[in-house]
Image (cartoon, rainbow, N blue to C red; front, top):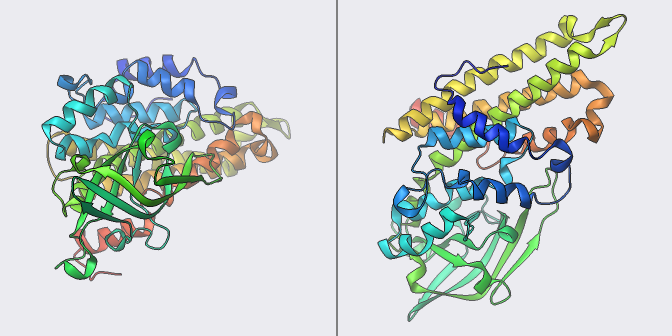
Length: 383
């Protein structure tokens, strides 16, 4: 089944599908991190798509990067295991010094360094980022970090982590969005030396953790960008993150509709394929329609991002539409399979669990709606 979305990049899709075919459903069914799969993506340069060629990357746009992430999920994998390597480097690329970019980006591009992790969310603040409590206090040529983070993904499979912490107390800034700063953390130097991690078992088998900082010292040279401007540095990378997540949801959506369509055609009940019944056929068709619509918004967000235009509205709407469409397709797929939808050998229950995450993270559906209401429709702020 082909997508009707524009600019389908068939050569890119074919190459990705050839790589993904080396990792059958049984591989992704394992309850462990897909190290070999991520290594293969890294080795062939797919995760360095958006790193400029001067640093060893491919120098591609968000359009191509989104197709890579889409195809991972469309082929039955889970790009959530590796997508941080694709977009976390954007903060460094846009706001890092020349020395920092030369130090880190070539290694990230080659895979010698993994920048899979970004530590922003905290247990007591959630998405109210400006009120985070983790502090970074400058002491000579070092910063001392204290605090706690939660839902910080892929630390156990990363060498570097971007950290957002407060460098100026909230009571001393004019706006609550000021006084936050970004740092690069060398995880090998930090874990066990002021930084501890506690893995969180979770529904979609996603490697994520609680993180505790107790007088962790990091060099002052690891500050990225301007001290006190970290919140704004982080914000300008979120459009790429949300668009790539939308692409992953779209990949899931196509996987679910393909799986449901095939099963509905071969499953015979009452002497006829169940897909002949409108009660089975229509939910699958409706899910496909909504995936196609979300796909168009995804490509519009990519087009605007790659052209250097503001794409905040499109990125947010693409993420909302795609996450809801993929979940609609997941429900249609598991309902089509009936009891077999809950059997692990069909992979539907695994993808079902994975798909549900994206209405909550990396930004919830309600917060996107509040953004649209306030910033696009000009309505009063709802929170």
